[in-house]
Length: 162
Image 1 (tube, helix red, strand yellow):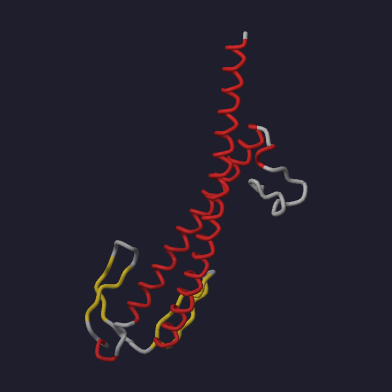
Image 2: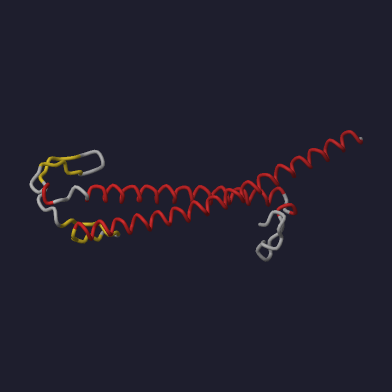
């Protein structure tokens, strides 16, 4: 879907200026759906990224000096119960798809760091794709406005000519 650049258009596609309003509207609707999907993906990536960052910050408090101290244990995001820190050298980590692995605090910190970096990189890629889709969406919307304006001009010319 190249605006004026026909060299970068995929084979079999037509330039935006030669597409009908109906075709442009279909492309616009498709781009809207793709934008919504990418925004949902970006939101999910950012949410997961913040959870891993929070986990990394929590791991900092797992030091031998805190062993035996009172703490609040989260059951859900808003429900906590009283507890005591038993072992500060090992943690159980959710590695995905329902698997949990016991590992040292240092290894868990590294795991969280790698996951956070992976999520950050993926979010950056999705943001780049979003930017490109928005640009395409704007080009389609602009082309549609121009076509509407030309149609109105033609209709006005017909009225004044009759």
